[in-house]
Image (spheres, one colour):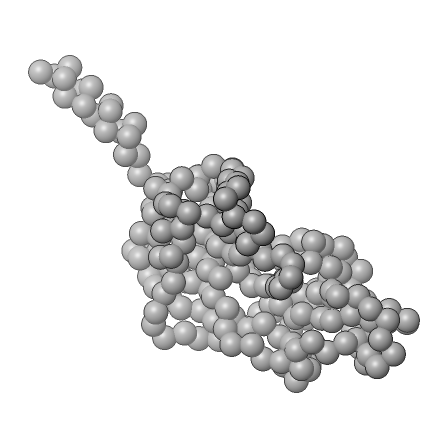
Length: 225
């Protein structure tokens, strides 16, 4: 009888292992990457969950500035999201294709688990991943997120003579979305709020549209945008 119980315990341990403890910083993040014809460059992740029970999500647009807001959901509910992410198979690096859909979008999940950062890229996800993604929203009172740094991302280059001069350090770091520079929020936030979305700026003879995107906790530079 003892050996039977031992075998049952081993089987249960192998099949239903618990998720690791929540990390101190970012635990889970979800974002969509959309290409042509309607790109959304340097967009904030739709859902960022932190180990202290905080969720950061996009807030209402303010001029050319993307804003964010925080909702505190508590560690217990955060742990439920975290466990569901493991149950959905996000504790591995994977690229999932979907040949039945042309164009569309790529859903990206980042899971920090057991000291490792796992990234899932799923093209137009279906089934279990789509069901899990549909749960990533929270209600409750939200507070404005106050960043210390803001990334200015230049894209849609042109040569418009009507563009206004760019007043900050030039965006020279190349990223997928375009060119980027990180600025102090105290220096740029009010300006970004007052500038209409889609405003053209110029440096020399080159002009471009700028998206202002706050850096989230744990992000330090253009490579995180």
